[in-house]
Amino acid sequence: MSQNGVAPHRGKVLTAETMNPNIRRVEYAVRGPIVQRAVEIEKELKEGVKKPFSEVIRANIGDAHAMGQRPITFLRQVLALCSYPELLSDKQFPEDAKQRARRILQGCGGGSIGAYSASQGLECVRQDVARYIEHRDGGIPSDPNNIYLSTGASDAIVTMLKLLVSGVGASRTGVLIPIPQYPLYSAALAELGAVQVGYYLNEESCWSLDTQELHRALSQARQHCQPRVLCIINPGNPTGQVQSRKCIEDVIRFAAEEKLFLMADEVYQDNVYAPGCEFHSFKKVLCEMGPKFSDTVELASFHSTSKCYMGECGFRGGYMEVLNLDPEVKAQLTKLVSVRLCPPVPGQALLDLVVNPPQQDEPSHAQFIKERSAVLLSLGERARLAEELLNAVPGISCNPVQGAMYCFPRITLPPRALQQAQSQGQAPDMFYCMRLLEETGICLVPGSGFGQREGTYHFRMTILPPTEKLKVLLSKLRDFHQRFTTEFS
Ligand SMILES: Cc1ncc(COP(=O)(O)O)c(C=O)c1O
Image 1 (cartoon, helix red, strand yellow):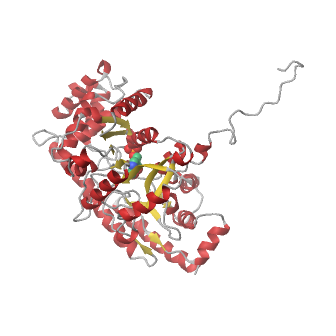
Image 2 (image 1 turned 120 degrees about the vertical axis):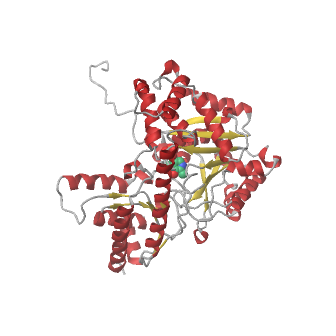
Image 3 (image 1 turned 30 degrees about the vertical axis):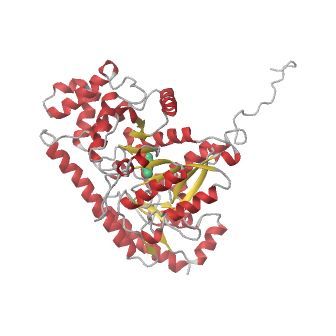
């Protein structure tokens, strides 16, 4: 009350004008307007609204379980035991699952996964992660003290960027990211007020990365910011490419020459399908290039429980390994993660099983291998199916899906469709994807949400729908594309 007894008019403190402007600049297409409309359509279908289709087919997000993939038995058995230790006396659970659960519980405060853990993550899990990396990289040592467990890979990526971004004006940190990119990167950079520096992947040669393009992007960026970071996604999202060893070596040489901090997003490291393609970790290649590189180039690499054969994204498990980090910065990193206490302990437990799965002489080994291989084989089949059927449609061309969980085909849109999109204030591929959703129930993400060369149009589609559903999706998409092209020709 004011002195004269009249309540002063008081607007809201937090308004669109007063809020953090960086947040307003954040965009995340994977859950953007198309997905919001898909949710509405699902509701309308439930309410009995008549549509030319009976269900929404979601191929917009890399969420394997949401698309029907079953969890790997061993992972869930150990998680069940960790969550409810009374089950440790249940004869239904195999001995190796019980051993893993006991080890994890021993590492937890009060023997419960309900307790906070150390901020860097449970020590026993970090040890297992380090052993996993050593094994993966042919014996190159990994130090558990360089491992930070995280809330999915997203959290670790953002944490690392927070440390890297500084300066104002022309000294503001520039971060090189691929175009097309996974929009976590553009969103995090917008939020942190960093300068996004895009380098284009080469669609004509299977979304490869060439260092000439890196040089171009870097020298342009140096005119207005201070590029300090180079982000790589391998295998690629949304583009599905797997980088060759030679390419990785070139990138490392480039980072060393130009003094850039490397961030290697390797969350799809088990998702490699194409013959002749192989996953090479940046850490391994860096170490094999000799001390000139392995003692100097600063690297953070990221992995996650969300992808690969397990697809356990709801558990939010992940880790980051850092190399050649300045000890003072490392202390700051440890401080920074401690502010948020710790990543979810169930996610840490799950990560432990991913990096330390059943061994050959253990009772769960055979079933584990059977389930894991079935998922990866099926993903490989769907990758080939998507590429083949998409390329059979006139006006759509798709690079081989060498890895990850997505294809990013290019679509040819008639000029009248471009005009129509413009008149509605929409990006042409948003217009296309919205029409596709309304007419067929297929939910994809427009290429514009990931970035693409000016004048080219794409969409991102996951290969996660079960094979039969994927075939239905692809045949509906073919018919739609033909109808759309005819309508606007
Ligand atoms: C390339 C890439 N990095 C990071 C993430 C985030 O994964 P997480 O669930 O571990 O946070 C994703 C998720 O789709 C991704 O595709």
